[in-house]
Image 1 (cartoon, rainbow, N blue to C red):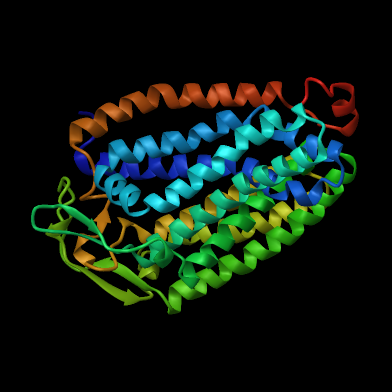
Image 2 (tube, rainbow, N blue to C red; image 1 turned 90 degrees about the vertical axis):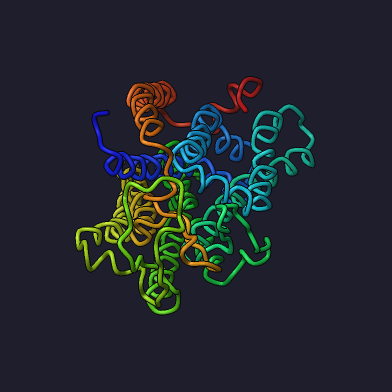
Length: 380
């Protein structure tokens, strides 16, 4: 094997992070546009402009979520088992919300009935806003810890409920996620539309960007002074496989900031989050739409990396039994499995990125009210 076991574990921590960021950036603007649909589109044609701005790409973008889930299953099977069983109700909520996306986008304009189209519009809104909120709440619960533990035979037990996930801090993280993706969606609309929709999108980007900045700052203060972080207090064998009970973990307020003292370069993540938002809003105001989209994507990367760097090496902390917390060292698959996956990823990930780039190149250009009216029977 080219890489040793420890290096492969770090590589897969990076890859999973890249996939999550890729999903948030690529499918994030879809969800952002959907969340703005009932509010920025004042006429039926304007709402069709918004829908057609994502109509040709949302299916491909959604595969980032499937890929990230598959990577977690293969690279961190303990995390997959504990998270998807404990967060089953939340995942079903996301799944049911996403059902409205294909139905709403594909069938909305098949009938001219205003009630039908209005219902589809709100269904499309739900399929954008609800997953954005739930994903943020999920990250918030990772930071405060989930109520699960392992017994001596390594059987996992989840002792929480769906309503326990809705803590004030987790809801604040949901606001961060929703406002972040709504800003991203508004910036994307500026890039792909013109006229009144574009003007409203510029204003919407400013509002959602300001909300995201405030919520992100409040979440950081809360983590520093009001949330028990986790740290490993014993020497952990980095070559441990699928056994989280071999370490000792302690909880302390502000412990999630330890990595920033140990590795000062990690401060680049929150700086990228705040700076990306500021630069995106500035570029959007100056009508540099492409730059605004790049900066908005950078802000998303910075916000997600801030959470990842804060938790490193933890992946899924336990609030009921700290030593049951899962880290990238003890939750990973075998050396051989990670190696085979790495080879497959190095082959197929570039192909996916090349194909995605080609699709966006082909689909580039503005979606206008006139183009919808000229192609009313073929447009979404």
